[in-house]
Length: 366
Ligand SMILES: [Mg+2]
View 1 (cartoon, helix red, strand yellow):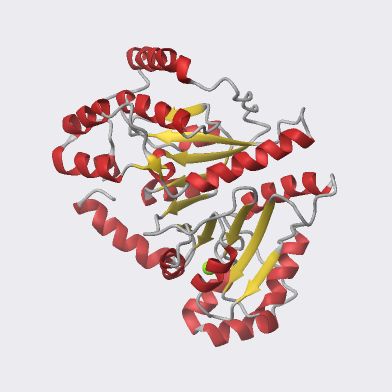
View 2 (cartoon, helix red, strand yellow):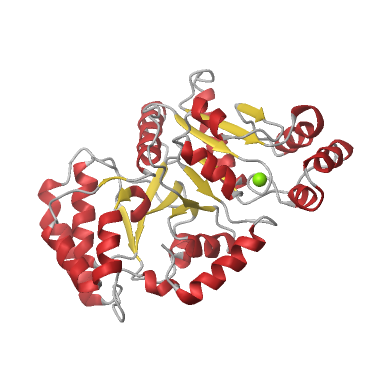
């Protein structure tokens, strides 16, 4: 079960007042090392909130291994002994840095506006480990003020309370729960070697079907293959597609892009979006583009690969993050150094879900 994956230990309740006091003490004790240049975080209802789990923001592989091999007590002991040693960056790190770079530019253009990215660190860790996380955030000079320590519980309630626009985690079970509640969410994977990405321009790449769009066309592809899919899409090019789980996130990116356009920054906008789809331009691209236009959404670059592998194209784009519902595209992207996130949504997940349910009954998800 997913609780087996909890790093809080059985019966720990981090929301109890004792633990909360311990947590507050920890924050106070660490205050002198907190950089004073941090601007005030925006109100959650105005912000574009990104919930990121500690395990994707930082590299905690070694610690996870200790927990799995030696148990909770050894894990906590190790974390406390290494409290002043910051974690190294994980797969979400450059994405979060790029969000902060966009915020810096937005604050310069619109000093009074609270339409900014706000990153919430989601963790199910023990409070002792929280100290090391705070030290790490300060060490890397990240602008993260909001922590959410769920004590091994589901993060869904917190994600809703924070009006979360995107949730990234290494745990596919939590990601599925979030999606089922209508929150844009994806499971993030760590490539062996991460490609270098821009520090000034945030680049986000999306698959189309079952990510930005619903899986209605994906069903045709699954049932009848790519050629029939192309034919079907050509025949239905004037019928708009329904929205998929990541549409809302593209929408908020578009809202921020317009703020830059309003100040004359269209060509050098610090946010750039990409559609990277297996659709072909000639036969099935029209329906995708018409749908995006009907939603009032622009995408900066649309790449129709007609079934060709996505990895090489993503290697050229160098996005901070790429979303797809098919694991083979995620694997292909990761092999070429792209940080890829799996969106477990739609027809493509039926088999995966069944396999995962079988696995959950025998062992904890990694
Ligand atoms: Mg797809």
